[in-house]
Length: 137
Length: 137
DNA sequence: TATTGTTATACTCTATAACTATA
DNA sequence: TATAGTTATAGAGTATAACAATA
Image 1 (tube, rainbow over the protein chains, first blue to last red):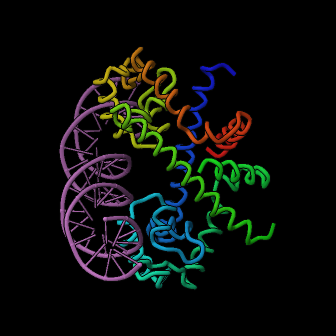
Image 2: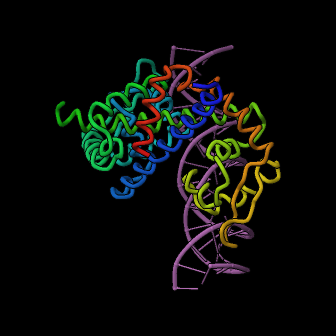
Image 3: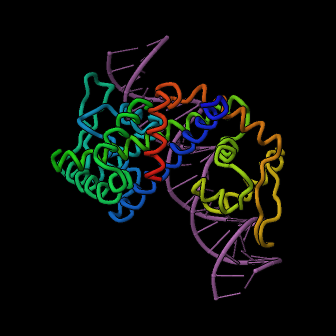
């Protein structure tokens, strides 16, 4: 591969990453709209596993902590998560409620139905993609 | 793979796509900041190849055409592109100027230096990633 | 003094809708 | 009537900075 091709590859790959993530965001928007809930809520649910400090959700969503407070408020109002005490008294952990888990499961199912990654790739391709994305994240 | 794992995979993969593309956007922001130009300009330059209608840039950037007008104005003010006549008189094509090409080359070089995709993946891994991303785009 | 989360505010990005000119 | 681009405006999403409580 020539040096110029290598440079051009960097640009194209970065552009493709931006484009495909925009597409993933469109998918969240479509599903959020179907389910009549805010996109921010769907993204938060997809980023949550077990109980974790609010600051960890901020880092997973790559946003400022000040964005998490009203988001967590909304999630609590919708009874999807609850704030629980953390290891020290400054920390508040977010924990999915049973309703939160149930909604997250429905989200997963719908994403699986609509996602181009699920529809256009084989199982082994998805596995490779996941590995590669994890390497660059 | 169990059915539940397949669902969870869909969610995790979508989350990873969003996260990695956000990271790619951060990269553009960092470089734009270094070069003291707007992020929108860097993204436009990376999405442009030969002369193309303004509407095509909109579709490459996945934005509304109304966003392209002021962006093209800015690109012209910076002497990076010029509007040239298209196949019919409604269409305006955007064409990179020599300065535009020069800046795009510098952008490419900087992306190649900083991009996690270039730094953390081998050449063959990048090739696979590009193929997979193109499949789902 | 440093850190977690909160609050109030401001800003950036981008879309919507109405418009002009071509087709 | 439909399409490409333009304009003015509005809205969503998110960050910044100052603050409170705790470490």
